[in-house]
Length: 231
Image (tube, rainbow, N blue to C red; front, side):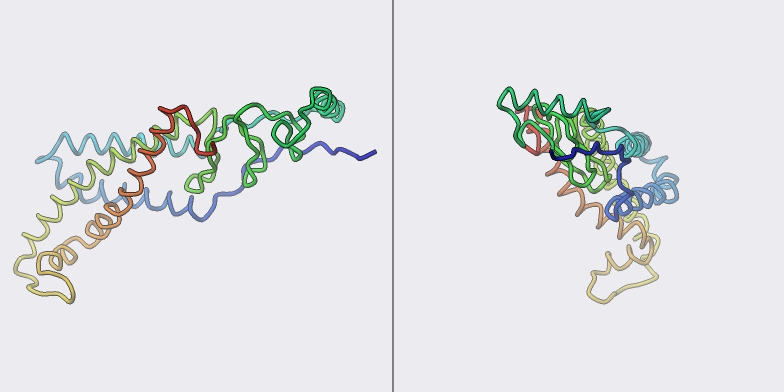
């Protein structure tokens, strides 16, 4: 008879490149905000500055929890006999197929669960594997994922206007330093000279906000329809 080996408990794989990229970008945005924008804009826009600070804190905390938390891994069989019993029960019920049984984890698959090839575990109410946090989004952490998305939108909604205001002040300070620049208008050129880090992170953040909004709207719509991305 065929031998059934019990899978070993596995930790989630090491952080991927996209996850490192995400962590680095968030760190850069946070650093630029507190080094340049916070002291410059606190007096003129205190509410926006405090909202951005709070949103950054929530974003960092939710991202950390997303990475470290169990997304809803289904328990593995404790012994070969337990796995054999599951197989026998499914066979008797006429449900011994890939829809009801995971041939990797050797467990019965509950409704809406799926085996994640990246994490190599079955996840309850599987939504998707997110490469930006290098973890699955499932039953236990979907709410945290939505908090992360909404807090990212809040950061963008406060950070970008504050950065724009900061760039205007940088232009005013550099009005006499430079009058022209290759392929850029005079105003943009003065902004890149006066505050290059803020200027480029503003451009990058504006671009990233577009697809972030699309993802947030899609996820919100799916929740309202009681659907997962996998479904």
